[in-house]
Image 1 (cartoon, each protein chain N blue to C red):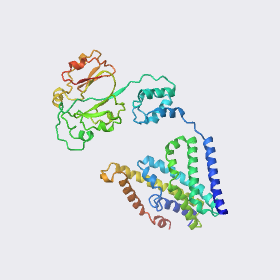
Image 2: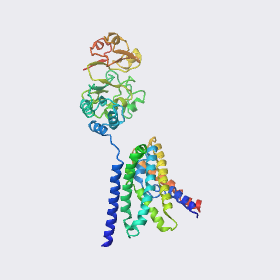
Image 3: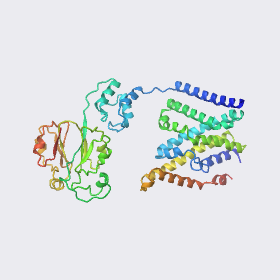
Image 4: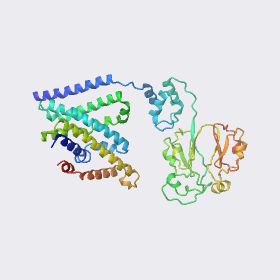
Length: 263
Length: 204
């Protein structure tokens, strides 16, 4: 009996002493926690997508708490998140511009037919390595849906061999932008505007041969645009979404019908 | 054998012939878990080495001073776990306060070490050795613990190198991930068999 008592007492005493030392140490050596950063982290969505440009949500929260970042950078969180962050930090929310990703290609099965019978791995990345993809146009959407697979918000669908993004579901996290082996996807503000649905870098004749709706860089849209929002880059037209007013004049004059209007 | 010579022999034996990971198969969890990159493997093994030496330095006097005189040697395991866990917590708190850069590089590994069987194994096995050999003292135990930590580091860094090579290999689908890692681990472990008898031969 005595032996057991001694054993129990010794182990209990040791536990007690260690506990006391730890308790004292945690008080003496307490490190002031960054409460602001933790409060901000609470309201962030926790997707760790990196769309804000920081290493995950905790990195962004830290930068916000130190006043190094603006609240409007979190795309997945949207407006509610910005308001919540602003409330925690005690600053004005400011207007957040909703954005969406858009696939700049209209090479549907009809417009740009397949040039091969592809039987390899059904990912865009694999197909892109073989003669630039399965379609006549080697700049266009391959349509195996690598972007669909990375989209966490179920906002992308492949319709008739071309990926289409649903702006209502898109959180503009930019995962698809990084994934697309053809670099066809870009993030644009969600507003009424013109979007050139082509990224072909070939000259007019070659582009036309590749796809029925390929941009041939005829400059008509650039000359027509009343605000000068369209420029020709790498032999296809590119709209500057900041300048575009969404008047739709360019879409009317385009001989190849490759300019679409986003509502 | 002179004291210095015996210390060197203990140190080398702990690294090569008695490697705690590859010969005694202790601490396999961090060995497989944190060996994806050389950097993290280095950080983890430095933390383990540090805790091994510290734990041995604390548990040896507790064992010989408190447990043995009271006939409580059978409580060794439970007391050691208690002490090591408390110690690691204390080290973590102290590092956080006084050495933030070191805490940031080691910090995430320290809690993992709390229940690492390699640390517990070192503290218990040095006592076993001391019981079998009268000349084996506190100094030997500390050197053995340090050697065990360095041995852990060698095993981790070597294996991290192997794994980084594996990543670029075309591995059959059925073997991808953990299976090929385990195969590689067993081969690495086999290669350490080649060291058996080396230290005795050197120090004779």
